[in-house]
Length: 346
Length: 264
Image 1 (tube, each protein chain N blue to C red):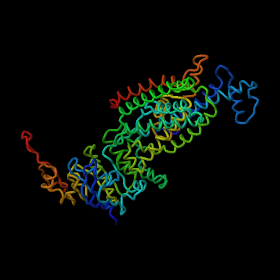
Image 2: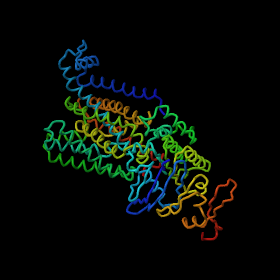
Image 3: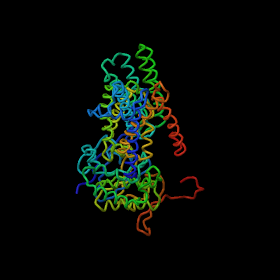
């Protein structure tokens, strides 16, 4: 078992990464403002005026209207995706289940694209979020029903179903793009690659309103996820209502993934890399796993977004590209390691 | 004292086939009841029906005087514990964490000291103190079986159902597990255990029920149930039942002809 000291150390480490990342990300960019002005503007934002408040109105507006919502969006989407991954792995009983890999994200993106192309978006951010949720929910249910047989996950089936769902949602996205006008088309392309660019406070509000309660719900279920790892029948023998937990968790995964995808697009592998890393450092107990994954996922996306913005001057790289650049090789490493240890999954 | 289980006229179907047929069986507190029989006879399905996993087609099962369907899942988990044949854990939880999960039904009911005491007692009884910090996933088959048994004991239930608890164990641990079953019965608990080793069943159970093609063909004390004729008719193999043994326990061995003669 992992000592409490180590747990505190790791979570504190993630938190430091997150806070430092937040400040650096808000300070750096086409307009360098420095951490003092960032602090001042932040305090001003919550109603405390200090001498650190930036004198320049443009600087302040840049921070309040562009950088802060963008950083907040990265924090929220990183946390929700990491938690979605951990929850998915818990109900599948498998560390390879991840919203991006098995197609939940592309299902959600298809829902969001339909919302934009057919004008549901006129209902505001909630309309896009609702359809993204429906798309993600449909994909999760499909994958779950296909890959769970007799209380066990068949990994090959899981991944093959993921391929099918990704292919179908990809084709759906292409079709919607084909049918849509130029403006919608650009927005849809942006989904496929994932980006925090242009995040607005209203969108941040929507993600927070859905994502934070969903994360809290996942944390409240942590002990049950521990039991579930004994297998569905044994968990039931210990008094767990497995069917309820399963349905509730599928909704949670769809909510957590859908709301992030609705505004930031498909960002793969966060839900794979972060919980895996936490498990290696702190063990598999879900209360700690979920809490640390929230902080770790937030930190990862803040730094990833910072790199996406600043790596090539004057251009904003899609963040989904970056996470896949890290996540792809990591996935490969997981597959290799499991092959050498346990003779593969098949 | 009420009976632990009262099973009346029970029939269970799986995949359209009747796996358990017209079973009548009582299980008493303070006894070890062994379910024996050939592969595929329906022992595990019968145990599954008693657990609440396998739906009942006809007939009834009463647990502690109450119909099984009336038990809430939480109450049921405080009344009966189940050790399944295969015990896998999907993530590398430590053995201690796995044993602690056995206390889940009591969360909010038992104090921290009661939990600790139950866990410590379960660890001692199953002889796994040296495995506590190891990941469950890295244990050998026998160690997994004992760690899972510890989890079942930590649950501290009146009724304990064990599905082939000795299957993966060596000679000494087989004996120890059955002695644990005996000590549970001595505390007044009801223990139902599925076994393949007839001699082990004869030595450590109060009663034996033989299951054949979904029916209980015989139930009673080991000496009543285990006769050479019955073993031969149920298993389809000639057997010797030795009663004059050094420790006084009945032994069942198949009649083993010379290996160069083709037929059994």
